[in-house]
Each structure stands twice: as structure tokens, then as C-alpha cells.
Amino acid sequence: MQPTPVTEHVALLDILRGVAIFGMFTVNMSADIWWGKSYVYADLALADFTTMVLVDLFSHGKFVTIFSFLFGVGFFVQAQRKLSRGEPLTWFWCRRLLALSFIGVSACLLSLPAWILIDYALFGVALLLFYRWEATPILVAGLVLILAAKLFGTNWFANLTSGTESLQSLNVREHGTLAEIARHTAGQLTEAFFDWRYILKNLDIPGLMLIGLYVGRRGAIWDRVVQTRMARRMLPWLLSVGFAGCAFWVAMEDFGVMDPASRLQRVLTSFAAWPLGMPVLGLGYVAAMTLLIDRPAWSRLLTRFAPIGRMALTNYLFTGFVAAFLSLSWGLGLYGEILPAVGVALTIALLPLQMWASRWWLAHFAFGPVEWLWRAATYGQLPTMRRRSETSP
Image 1 (spheres, rainbow, N blue to C red):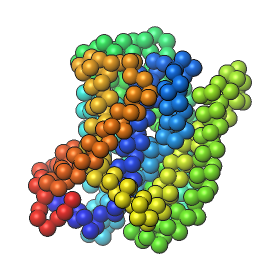
Image 2 (cartoon, one colour):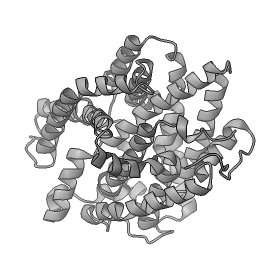
Image 3 (tube, helix red, strand yellow):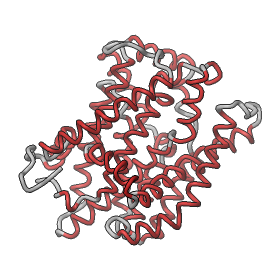
Image 4 (cartoon, rainbow, N blue to C red):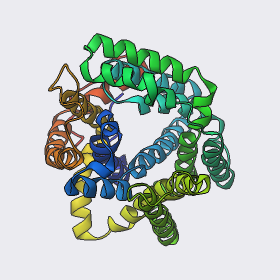
């Protein structure tokens, strides 16, 4: 139960996780966190409007794509390790997902925006159905699921974000005690995860995971030649198509070009954002960083994100804690008062702290604190926390 030695770590994966954590934090602190529903873009000052346009264009949906993709990659790594040792995979993976769901539910009940961890625990089970498939069928299945999510996804969740329920939800978030927020969140979790429409709407999550599994099956996890060949081949398409889709969506939505009465424009704008724009551009970021890591200047910059990525779960929950502490009544109670420019500025200001703290922690301990908890819950025993002398951070 000791950590994987650093020589076995794929540094690029740690970097991608670290960058994804930072990118998701910028979105959480501007567009997606609760107070993001409290303002209208047209009413924003120039600095805040510009911030939102940049977030939508370059961050929104891109980094959660990377995180979902990496979940599939991580499954492939775990599966290969188990199979090479002759150990059973299914029971191990189910225990791991059950532990992740416990962490996610606990974080949500403590008012942290950690819903996606429960999504991963739920949809991650599907990976067991595909891990013995060949690469091409895995890719096709992933693309089909992403398109199916778009086809079957509905706005059934609107009752949680509009009308009476929306006002109730906003009131609980803004003024409720921790216990009241926990009860409200428990109701939302129960409603979502016991409704088949929620599953259909979010089939793109396992779809993105399968694209990560596909990349692993193609041999691109440890083989640098395969990595760079795939990245060079796909980079122009991913960046151009993804950026074009996001630019169209931003022009129509943020700048008010879209006619709300035109159903065709709404459909085209929605499709341009997802799955044409956000996930494609997010995968373009993966391809770009895969190539940039070979350039010394970029390598020095990107490797600073690796410690954050090695403690990805801890750092993700830390960013959720920051958002909750700033906004909710048990913290500073600034719900709806932090506008986008300030929110993103805070994420940038906290980045060096996260880098330093993660690097310091890994110099002394084998796992991040939440990673240690996840590992303990998975194996049913307490792993050694202190780093052995023969391993390095």
C-alpha cells in the first residue's frame, strides 16, 4: 500500500490534472458557482463582462472535459496494473468508486460544490464494460454516448434553477445554516440520482471517460512516440473546430446575437457549445500540452502544476471549500457579491499557494490527505502516510 514511486508516475498526467484543477477553479469562481446565477452578462461592468467572455471562450467546459478524460486514463492505468499482477479488477474498482461516492456525498452535504465526484463514482462503473474492448470500438462507443447525451438531454433540471424552487434554493444557499444547506442538498442528490433522465442527460461523462480509455488502449500512456504522433495529428483539428464552436456560442450568447425566438438558432448555439466546442477544445489543450512539454520554457512552467495534479482530489475539494467559505453564511456570506473579475483574480492569487503547499506536502507525505482517505476506504486499512526515504515527491 505504498505510493507508486515517482519513476513510475507519468508526469504529463500529473500536469494535466493540475492544469485542469486550476481551469475548473476559474469557472467555479465566475460562471458555475451559485452566485453565477445572480447576475446577467449585459448588466456587468466592462472588466467583469470581459472576464466572463474569456472564461466562456477558453475555460468553460474545457477543463472538466480534461478531468473526465483523465478519469478514463486513470482507470486504464489501474486496470493494466491489476491485470499485470494477476489481481481481480472488478471488485477493486467498485470499492474505489464506492469510496469516491462517499467522499463526494460528504463534501456536498458539507456545502462544497463537489457534485461531479458523485457523477464519476456513478458513471465510472461503466468503464468495466469496455476495458477489454479494442481501441476503435471504445472510441466509437464514447462518441455515441456524447451524442446520446445531447440527444436525450433535457432541461428537466430547470425546476431546480427557475421559478419557486429556484428562489427556495437561492434562499437556502444564501441564508441557510450548514444543516439547512445539507438537508437541501440531500434532497437534490436524491432527486437527481434516482431519476433515469439524469443518467441520459449526463451520458457524455462516461463518453469522455471512454475517450481516455481509448487513448490508453492506443498505447499513448507510456509510449512517448505514440503520444506525440497522436497529438500532432489531432492538434490542428481539435483547436480549430473547438475554438470555432466556442466562438460561435460566445458570440450568440454573451454578445446577445441570438434571437431567443428562433428555435434553430438556439439548437445551433447549444450544439456549437457542446459537444462541438467545449470538449473538443479541451482535448485540444491536452494535445497542445503533450507537445509543449518537450520545450524547455514550457516544461518549466507546466511542471509547476504537477504537485497539484498528484493531489488532485485534495486540491479540487480545497477550491470548493474556498468558494463555499466566500459565499455561504457559515463563512464570509458574500453570496452574489463576488463578481467574475474578482473571482478569477482570487483563483490566480491562490495558484502559487496551491503549488507551494502541494509541493511541500508531497515532500513529507506519500499521499494528499483526501487521497489517503480514498485509499484507506478502498483497501479497508490505513496506508502509511509518511514518505519513505527512497521515494521522492
